[in-house]
Length: 198
Image (cartoon, rainbow, N blue to C red; front, side, top):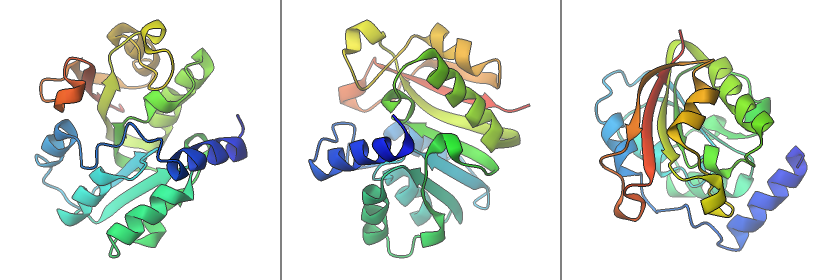
């Protein structure tokens, strides 16, 4: 799909309430990671953010440079309505693969699993994450731990080894393993990872 087709596809899902990935609050692993961060001036990107509860939490915790990217305007408008003090300039209606910028931290939360799982798309995802990170910057988040043939569609998963095959040519793995603090419906089905640009 091109950018226009992707925008239409995701906007229709939001309009129809077909948002099974939306848990209505920041996921526990991301929240607990954020709670360890001290520097609230770091520049943070959340791509494919949807309703962006993680961004809302970061904003309320005093992080000043949080950017939310989504291909559909609808979830960005929803965040703006929920959190009127969130900077409109930090709401980016863009295709992730066409975005440019430099960030200290990128948060992965149900974005990778939404992308059609071709070798090209997954390789481009990893390369783009590296492009968008400053030296020393981190990609932190959750990846679904299930094989594609079991999933039958979105969310598209993968194995730890498969994810590493895409990510480690671009980023150094700091940690990547079974997530111990997933929300109950996702328990045993998520990997938590921290990858660093060197």
